[in-house]
Image 1 (cartoon, rainbow, N blue to C red):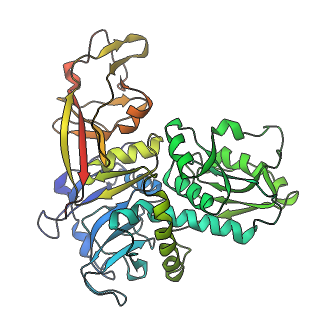
Image 2 (cartoon, rainbow, N blue to C red):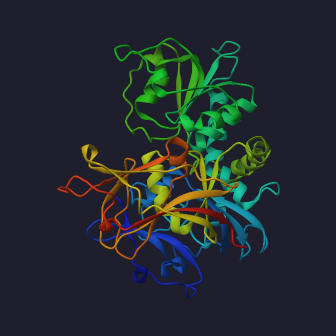
Length: 468
């Protein structure tokens, strides 16, 4: 279910209208709403009072944050909630020996799950979550790495601890990273390549191939290429180590093909939370399955050792890792795209950002009716003049409520007078067209161009920049 827009009158500001956030709430009937709002009055309540005040400059956008934006009860455990499991900013109150004005990062400890997180202009992370930000990294750079980078390093370390490279793996053996087009996947590819490993990156997204190769992947394959025989509990041993970010059947296939004495690190569940396998990889090959939890397991001391290592990794990925800048008003659209698997790499939320529009393309005209698909199609050329950090987004406003599907992605409900925007930069990389389908049952097959009842869509070229 897509979250509905958040009525602004449902929350109160703690400082007039100056400080804002992305707020998710669930009502008594279970309906989820989300949107830009003043910081809730609960921000200053006792549950958050144990943390020092931080001026948030950037927050990572993780898969768990997308689940929180959708109101997933396993992540968004309180209501209302400001998502954002990590953040970077400046201390406005002293904490843990750090003075006012110190540049800090904060991760885990319930941020964005049981307490308000980083998708806000101000936050109160617990003191135990706060560490000095490495001086080599800006706030945006630290969140381009963020929890994804911490998770990738933890996975690489865990594999080496459990099954050292010399054990059970011949020289030149391959290391597999699944879900490699995501933030954790791309950083895992880079971290493994930096250690001299032969990395096979597995992804469905062909648009990520060049970036993965630049980050150090020796080859990039589709998940179908690593599928084992469904009728067998083991496949030919191939992987000296696996970092799996998706779960489900892909994780099961990876276990079947892991070399004797080696290990698999499990991180995500984008492809499913169930694991259907046998005991054979474990008892016949001595394979170890390791769970990686960057949110709760690393101690502050362990986190303190990981951040300098991320700073060392950053020069290797700075020019290669795709990173999108997302303003608060774009959080809902990016979350929907992340859950649908239509975005790649990393995004950083800039709570104080301003989106400077370079120019707009009116898409009201030239839509082609496609009756056999119950759809309308709009073809266009790739926008020119894009600069680093720029994005292309679709902005839509309808005169009446509408339920639409864009290129297979269900849009949040469009309500009159409430513009909706979704980044479509990735769509332009894959295909230069938009295919729009009305999701309302009983809609007549289109026979003309886009009807006026569906409003006026625009393509905007925008540059999202931090404000101060």
